[in-house]
Length: 360
Ligand code: ADP
Ligand code: MG
Image (cartoon, rainbow, N blue to C red; front, side):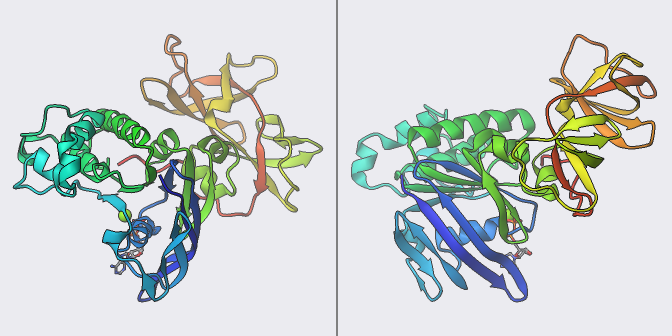
C-alpha cells in the first residue's frame, strides 16, 4: 500500500505531447482505472510512473517521496512498482513457479509466497506447467501473480485483458480484482474499455489528448460527466435539443426535469443528456408519451437497445430490460416516456462519441 500522486506531469516525443500536464492522486490501496481512447497517453503515463521514461516536467511521488521530476529519477528497480504489461510477457523457458518466483528472495520462496499468489489468481497447483501449456487467460493470471509476488506497494496494469475473449475476460478481471484487494495493493489499471473501467475501479480517471479530463467514482462519472465528450465516452448518450424553462427542459421528448445542483445554465442554445435506460417504452399513443419509430434493435442478452426516431427526426435510444417481453420490431411505432432527470450542456460543444467505443 502506498499513495501515488502525479502533479503536472509532462512528456513529449518529438512534437507529440503524449502527457500534457497530468494530475492524479491514487489513494493508498485504491484501484484507479485510467480510461482513454487509443493514443491518449495511457501507456506513456504508466511508463513514467514505473520509471521507464524520464519526465519533461512535473513530479511523481510515492507515499510523499519524490521518485521522478525533470532531470532526476529513482531507477525503476528501486521504486517497488510492479508492471503487468499488455501481453503477459512470461519467460517462456521457465515454469509457472520459475516465472512467479523470479523476483522473490529466498525467504519469500520458503514462506510459500508462490503458492499463495497462484492461489489468489485462481491457479493453485499450476506451479510446474510451462507457459506454452497455458491458455491466454492463464498466462495473464501468471503475469499478475508474478507482479504481485514481491508485495509491491503499487501495481500498474496496461490493458491486461485485451487479448482475452469476452467470457474469460470477465472471469480473469474478477480474479485479478480479488488478488489486488487481498494484497491491498495500490493499483492503476489502464484501459480503453469503459465497461471494464466502470466495473472494476474505485475511481475512474478519463484521459484525452494527454490530460485527465475528469476523475471520480464510476457512478459520478456516468451520472455527471464534465463535458459531452466524457458523457459519450463513458456510456451511451441520448442528446436532446432543449429550451430551458425554470427547472424544466422542453425537448422533443417532452418536458425533462433538470438534474438539481447542476451549476449555472449555459448561455445560448442548450441540449440535455439522458441515458438510454432513462427512456421507457409504452404502447403507441399512451397518454403522456411521445411517439417514435423503431429504427434498429441491438440485442445483448441481458438487455436490448432500441434506436428510435421521433416524429421530428430526432434520434434517441432506449434500453429495455424485460427479457420476457417481446421487443418491438424495426418499423414499429411505440410511445416513449422519460424517467429521472437530465443534465444540460451547451448545444454547440463538441458532441463527442454518441456510443462508447466497442470493447476490444
Ligand atoms: P495509449 O497507450 O493511450 O494508446 P500512448 O501513451 O502509447 O497512448 O501514446 C500517446 C502518444 O504518444 C501517441 O500519439 C503515440 O503515438 C505517441 N508515442 C508513444 N510512444 C512513443 C515513442 N516511443 N515515440 C514516439 N511517439 C510515441
Ligand atoms: Mg497503450
